[in-house]
Length: 277
Ligand SMILES: [Fe+2]
Ligand SMILES: [Fe+2]
Image (tube, rainbow, N blue to C red; front, side, top):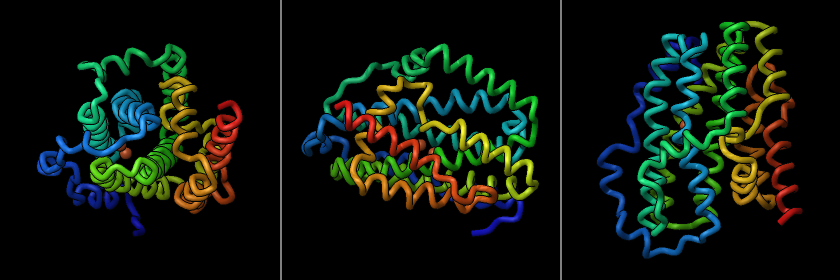
């Protein structure tokens, strides 16, 4: 699907019905969850994903202070997008509870509180820096967004396959549908913005190549982040599917040919983690 303007991308997004409606959620057989086994190694993974979804709110607040977040089209998208991510976090938390894993009542609050000072300072610096570079940075933000959405989606696909729990599968299929719409928005806007100038493309490529880190790292601990990545992407099938569904798709963005950053970084984490287990 090729869009020529950001408005067209927004119009497309707004036409997409929500998957995780109240009806969808009410139709999940929550009481049946505990009747299927859930390997406990996936519990920290589910908690990590839940927390990262909830932290979207924080990222959204930061982005609203930058020229990207002030763009009327992007901010319109982000209002719905951040709501959808909150639902993902809540639904994963409920799944864990129904599976017999207790969580704090105010877990969202705990997650935000636990974000390290380093992350807060670092993000403040990034926001200030972004304001200096101005609108030219929008393409980078959108590219980052696209990479985050694609890698998250791939993480959910892997979790679905590996955990093989029928009700988790139903939930993740719903989440994946919404993540795919997010990917399409970010990727389409990134494509348009990157098409604007050579400087924009060079800046975006430079930042991704040097500063991209997996979703949640910095906000969650390195240990938590590495565990999730290693659990989901261990083995050749994990890395091959990441390369196919994420890296090769990033390479189709203007100025991103030959970029293997995501596969390299995830591959390194997986190999290091395997060695230290
Ligand atoms: Fe999400
Ligand atoms: Fe998403």
